Image 1 (tube, helix red, strand yellow):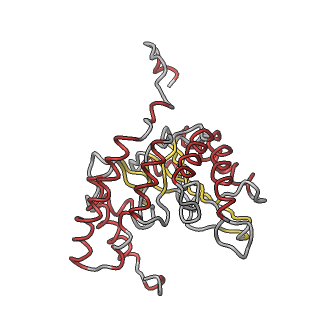
Image 2: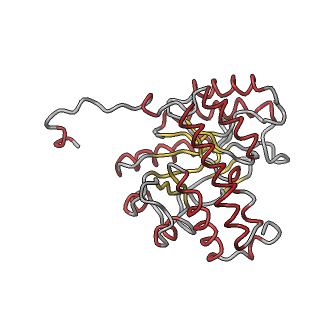
Amino acid sequence: RPDAPAAVTADEMAAFKRQVIGALAPASSAVLLDPEFGAAQCIAADALPGAVGLLVAVEATGYTGDPAARQSQVLPGWSIAKTRRMGASAIKLLVYYHPDAPTAAEIEALVRQVAADCAAQDIPFFLEPLSYSLDPSRKKLEPAERRRVVIETARRLTPLGADVLKAEFPLDADAAPDEREWAAACAALSSASVAPWVLLSASAGYATYLRQVTIACHAGASGVAVGRAVWKEAPGLAGEARMEFLRGAARERMARITELCDALARPWTDFYAPAPIEPGWYAQY
């Protein structure tokens, strides 16, 4: 209900998430859920297949501070330790980040702390930085600035301890329709990131996102973190019509994207390999 979002109840939000997970999880390697409306509810309802991974968000929704100097935080009352205890496969932290913002150092410190907490809890850390404009009159970056910011963000944040980077597509696809430019920008992003990176779908339509995924994986991406490009029509449907869409067109989209990643994505093992295991390894574990 974009015209009246406050009218949506917690039960409606949780029910929608259960429906999406129940329909799409079997075609996915993992799902990402929030602690407020999704993770515990889907586990309790047995909507999540046991062989599918569970990523749980740890950030508070939105941001505080000035729109041109955004601040992010861990959800009050939630923690990496609680995420680990509930059986999650990994945690996800979303931060609003611009390398030139006054709060850049503050966000970097938060990323370091969450990385340290994840290491202490022995749980992988997925980092999702979202860019924004420093011009209060613009919500999004100018197309000419987007490439620099997305790539510089990867260069600055991935060495701080993230295991996987969830990256925005580094170009505005509408402003730069030449796919050769897409490939060059994705290759530059791969060079900048010291961790595997996966492609967000953001507001891209399914057909555009398929092209982005293909080019990104050829250029070094290790997979995707896709949401609305697969299921964005579902909130506008109700009852059996919604379930038919989720089990049909949305499931087919998810399966196709998964097939692309299986065929083209760079393996995460290119970045991480186990050290030699000596007989006394457990004493130092």
